[in-house]
Length: 388
Ligand SMILES: NC(=O)c1ccc[n+]([C@@H]2O[C@H](COP(=O)([O-])OP(=O)(O)OC[C@H]3O[C@@H](n4cnc5c(N)ncnc54)[C@H](OP(=O)(O)O)[C@@H]3O)[C@@H](O)[C@H]2O)c1
Image 1 (spheres, protein in one colour):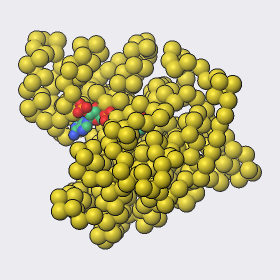
Image 2 (image 1 turned 90 degrees about the vertical axis):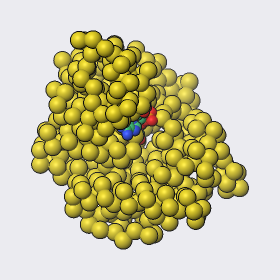
Image 3 (image 1 turned 180 degrees about the vertical axis):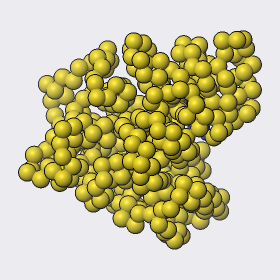
Image 4 (image 1 turned 135 degrees about the vertical axis):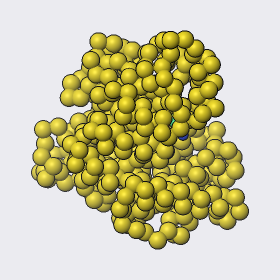
């Protein structure tokens, strides 16, 4: 029995994780859940999975949840960042599933690593904002970080039994999102509702917008570079609209190993939860390559989708720059979802915030949190004054 703490349990990854848990009650129990404000979903999860410790975004939500769940069987209900940290380190979990959205996931994920608890990591913003610090602490505490992101899971799977020095290049695949074939004039007018219609994956709103701008791939290039210890320029991107090949590893002898599967996050989640074993899953249906018929590939277009080029630029600069890219992007995506800015303003906000930042060497978690606050405030100022 593996005891899980799930940070972000009410989100898309959190719910898919609990679907895997529900299918394998002989393998997993739920020790703790941390969520934001979606109390109806969280209350149902508490009734089904009976965690001892729960946390929500703030005290007001915690008070409402306590009212909904009176009685001796109810879990301890905490609130705020301290509550999420407590769920990560004090629920008795053997594995923390880090699946909050945004840099807010950094502190509880770091707390789990500090406490020596293995992490199944979906929250890519953590590695973008503070990757070298996170990896150094994980190495020091000998804590495994198992990727959940489908591309990084694919690479992780392709690397099993391989020596790192045999790797020449990593290749991330990208669906290209809903605007893959749109021209620049159409992209200027793209709406949030259109951007939220991802062709292959059902995901939370922030990552869905990131997929449309290709900022998601920018974040993933940085994530892969940090996780697998290669410079970002050795991490390439193929547009692969069918989302069947989830990523590839090219070796020094020219061999390429890819991982294929239906686009369903339960696959990489189950792999991360049970690693190094594989669990049977009732869904999705098996991959039928005759039905897929075609696997196609294109080079990414960084003119129409400048987010990807910004990601490589931030990775090359390193230090605090990826944190700034991520923070500005979080602010810009929230503004776009609120219909306050246009689609192409998202990379403009990110580029302007990066240009205003004097890069520093990464030194501490406190410094990352401070840079994150600065970049969010700078981006907010750009957004409030329409200075794009
Ligand atoms: N979805 C995917 O298929 C996918 C694939 C690969 C990687 N990822 C990564 O996984 C992470 C989660 O993505 P998602 O699509 O699952 O996002 P999502 O559906 O938006 O879920 C986000 C989760 O984070 C919680 N949350 C947000 N702000 C919080 C706060 N301040 N305090 C506590 N909890 C907070 C939300 O709680 P409430 O909803 O209760 O407010 C929710 O449980 C992201 O980093 C994303 O890039 C996702």
